[in-house]
Image (cartoon, rainbow, N blue to C red; front, side):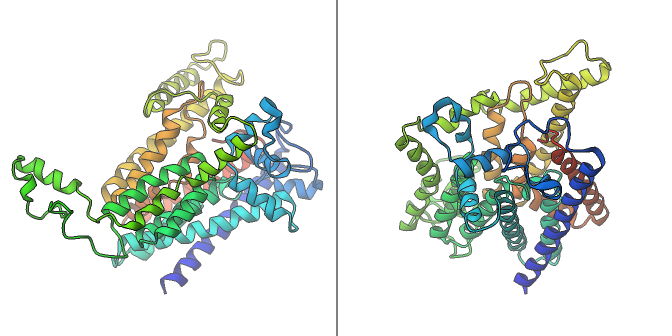
Length: 451
């Protein structure tokens, strides 16, 4: 019964949200044309050249970074060409490899990419539905929360990327699968999906953090927690203190006992060592091809990413947003309060304000995840955000942050749980989110930079 409900809710959200994406994007092109920077990175035969109708239908899927994936799928990384192709290595290989395999059996590359993203999105939505139901147990509102969580992901403001030729859907499906199998103690499946996620994007390796938390602390469906750790320390936060902790003050002793793993380490923990295997295989390929194996990380220099300390991008983003607000309130472009990337202070200011707004909205959701969901979910969000928030981009410190937030599904799970007893707020938020998705989809299709 739960499976049928999850399939029905997921397919409904998938179909309705994608219809809205294509309708808004193609409508914008018919009304305003393809946009002023159509030639930015628009290789013929890959993102255009399909005839008037083909170019129109491909617009919501083949823009900006989609060109990188299509080029890699068609030509490969070609590390032998040195700096000319070094930027390609910033895009991890699983998505373009799957794209190449799928397009080799018939569909053109753009259509293959859309089909791949849609299939992954369907699996991701189904998994989010099942995970939300699992975490809420037998509560009467579990089904409504799961349905709402799926809708919040499918109609998220940046959900246009979930059907584009981008790796977001694939990574989302793999990361949801990692959580599902870890919750059920199926560590071989966790290792396989985690390795694939690490080969999909650089953030995939941080899935090791929540997997370790679930392995040691749970909750787990495969077996009950062990009664005590090997040294006799009590594992339950409410149980009596062990002899080893009696010399500690009462409060400190309780916290010390809580930090002890609730599950003993067994031989199946060796599966967890395979999670970074996808990243390792990619770096090994580059080394065997005669390139620097760390090239994917050096390639980020092209986009101006620099280490600013742990989560230092939060401060940089706040400063950029403040300067952007000053720029817009000044009403003039002659004096810029910062160095805009494209020479348009108003456009850059609006981007920085938008990016910081996404971060500001994500912080309460992160706190909600830490309070309401098992610890592994909050640990995952914190670890995943450490990468973009520690390596800001020069004049646009939080660049691409909304896309990174899009795949952090625990945020949507908590928001759905919070909104279930507030149906009016849920309807208003879903409508606003769907409208934002339509607007961002129209901007994306007309070659305006989004996220």
